[in-house]
Length: 489
Image 1 (cartoon, rainbow, N blue to C red):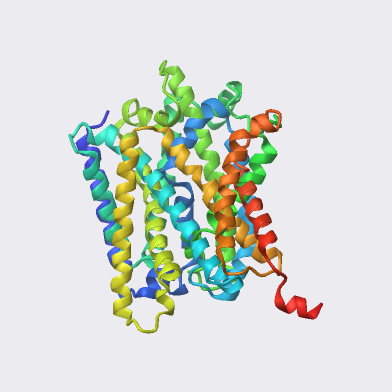
Image 2 (cartoon, rainbow, N blue to C red; image 1 turned 30 degrees about the horizontal axis):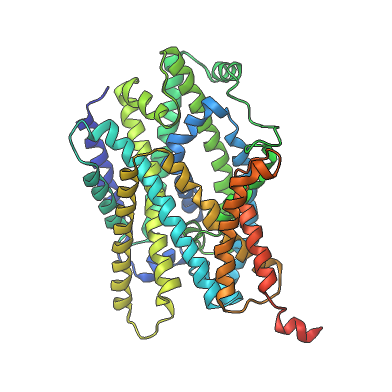
């Protein structure tokens, strides 16, 4: 096992490298650079960097850990994700480029008015705060347990330092900087993943074909679940995965902020399709790694599983070089999701809630100062949320918080679907807000009672779709025919 102090030195070197990239890319940056990268981002860089953003530290730690109990069934969701990315490329991206939006929620403003616009942005802000801080907590907790506890560094201090580092390298350049730092971090993450697979296979004496055969014998390679009542039934997982991608990527300011920073629609579509293909391969590698880790654990009579599997083996049972690669890979998986979330939340709050882009009374410098203050405020909120998760001290809180996406993105899905699929109008009153709040509550009630009401049927990933459809139905009830359509009829 490598010295925790030496591992921490590598972490610091990595941080300094990020700061160097941030300094170089943020020179002459302005507010337009921060929000949308001056619409001049290279589509290949964005596509590659989005791999790290979409996966995060949770994927790096958790996906390999699921193989022991679920085999490769997570790949069902990955197939659905691919379908969702294609729908985003050919339905949502043309819409965003046609309207030339800085925030994607401007579509709701144009289609329905200010109340819908601010409601959609508010759901994004809530969801991103909870999801991003949950991911941060999981990774920081791994670093704390395996490195910093031995150095007697308190959890609050490392949390503060990591958030400060993220704040520093996103403070000036925003999206313009993140496009480049995400590329660097995704490179480190993928190299870490591939090298770890190679070294573990080498330790086990496996070739690739031997490894696949061994995993197949242990039933780890099973992908499709054909139990209709199961929450992981393959049709539910594929459909749910598609709509989860539409919600968490296509209707998410963090993910789409990078896409609309690309110069043209055609390049943005190439970015999305390239990213989706690479993502399928990367997720397969994480599942393959998970199978290898379980075989390795069995060979050493280790009873570890789940989220503890990869960190424990990499940091305690493998050569020091694997420990270094794991830590760098883990941090590289952590930062693309955290820095993008912090920047997107700042952008959304400034543009969607404070209307800074439409405020003609503020100078560029005044807008910049407000934006930087909001950026610091969200970093503080991140810190408080992470400390709350630590106080809860329950790993299941991660699964719970990440599942919030099914509730918070549902109203966004319903609003966008209603706007795209119908020509009806919404009155700017409390009823629209009531529908968007009632749909998640009804979805929760249905989810909790589904096995009783539906003869053992268990709701899983399709919760987001149910939530979105309930929102759509509610909006349909309170809406009115478009005035122009009514006149034409």
